[in-house]
Image (cartoon, rainbow, N blue to C red; front, side, top):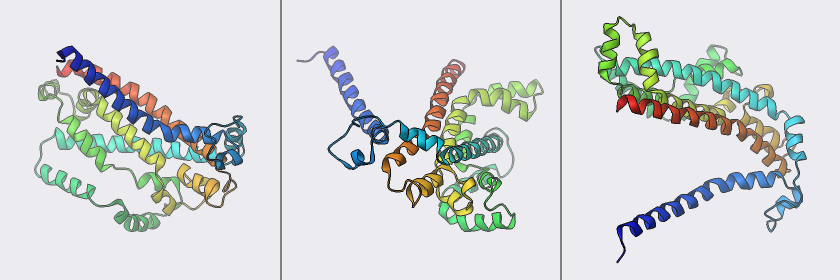
Length: 281
């Protein structure tokens, strides 16, 4: 008959085994991409060779220095930073109004926001394209940013986070004659730091990997984002259209900014959780 300690150990090892399996499944595509990028074209086509015979680091040198890939990465990083900054500002202001302020029609307004979130993004492409055309923002970086100034998901996420802020703290700030902007910046946002970081992380990854909408409104190669650039230059009839090792090297380089963003955001997320746990407790 098993004891309680043995059952706990069995449960622990079961969880470790399951998490290890999921970890291997998640890491395998990235590891395969890295290994493929270090192979020659012949080795990549040989399915019996999993590891490269001799790492071809020249693939990375050629992809980084002799292709427009750095420009595509810079374009995506630039657009992502601007877009996420605007989405954070607009999301914080709107979420604060929905969660903290009291006014007539607040519930109906938030319901309209949620209804708009249910509309497929593809259904907005034509009207958004017409609006940008009339504003003469097609094929511009400004058009990419303006068309993504507001995130409905961000508003919903931040509203839920702001509603968890203790009301006595907000009332105390009001008694000290703090303005709504001061309450938002010095009371609400510090307590909602984990949600702010989570939204910034999710939004930045979505903007960086966005393909469909940028491909519809940008035509000039110098304004391609990374997803467009990879498909146009490396895959779809580009210079390395048949050299899949070079394609893998370019794809690996484009993932690096996302890994850096996640590493920094993860540290901020953990510190935000630890700093707010004591306040709420």
